[in-house]
Image (cartoon, rainbow, N blue to C red; front, top):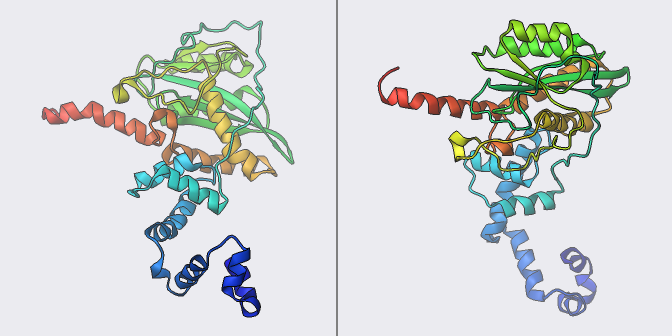
Length: 324
């Protein structure tokens, strides 16, 4: 309206125009005064001007996938005292919004005839420490050169991706290579359980023998189980942190990570040309996911930081007692 009045005030005058339009002359003159001297703006407008580039920076630095909740939490982590409703309002004005995950398809083909290990998890994950329970799964990505397949191994405690591989074929070596990376990158002690569904790569002889050689207990759940669901937004945190145990369903955690992978990377950056392009992008995304992405189920912090908080708490009594 201000621009309309500016364009026609020479012919009709400000007050006659304002009598027709739903705007008071005082409002118009106040707007023009602010244009001439921005320091006359209200405190909220000045604050908004400072926050907009910060919101844009957080949004762009995190794959453009964060909604108002995570942008707000990241700003708070950086020391910016701002209300969540303010972030939501400014993001709406700026025309930016987080991604929304859709429903996907399961790619696991169970081998009903193959002998498989027992289900040691029984739809109840209680990971009280890192390297206690791993879950593994495989998904696919369409490229111009054909389908490529991605395997992840995820630590249940922190949701950290500890092993991953990309391949042009759905073969046993794909899952085995991801497992090898996890074993070498995360030396483990006793009582580590590896859980997967009944997909053929996870029940192969070489895969199960590698688990046995590494001292990892295999566990296999069902496929298409009605209990295979996980609410990634649920405020589940571990007992050592907020006094509540983490309980998620069999392999739903892996499906959740794949859902984020597809939503935050694959669908936003496609179409994909080749296996190499998917592999390099996955490398970057996994590094961001492990080290910088805020995850609600672990208290809105990155997986690596969550694990470090655990270790710091474990070592704190020993340090206090002078034992280290």
